[in-house]
Image (cartoon, rainbow, N blue to C red; front, side, top):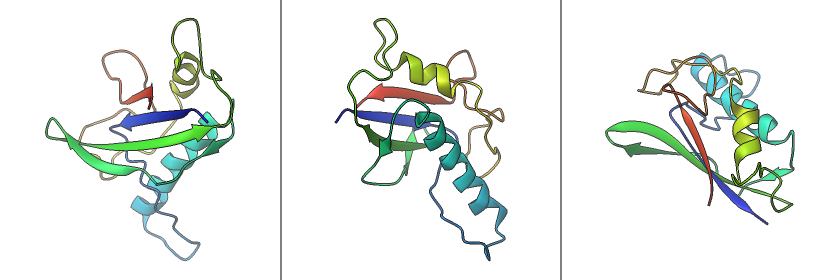
Length: 122
C-alpha cells in the first residue's frame, strides 16, 4: 500500500471529543482532522497506524501525519505523484485559531504564499 505524508500548520489533532465534551478547541481539532480525511477519501480509502503528531520546525508548531491508501498512483497528476490530492485539499475550509502558532487562513492551502499544508510520498 502506498504511504503518504502530510505536514501542516493547521491543528489536525485527532481529539475524538464525545457529545458531552463542550471544549471548542477539541471539537475544532477533530473537525479539521475529519475534513482532511474526508478530502483524501474522495479518491481513496484511507487508513493509518498513528494519529497526527505535533512537531516543531523552524521554531513553528506543525502537525505531521502518515496515511496509506489501497491503490498506487491514485493521486498522480502528470509527473506529480500527489497532484490530484493537492488539488482536492486546496481551499477546503478549516477551523483556525486552535493551538496552531502560525496564523493561517480558514482553509487548507496547498499553493501560493500562504501555503499551510504539504503532501508528499512517504
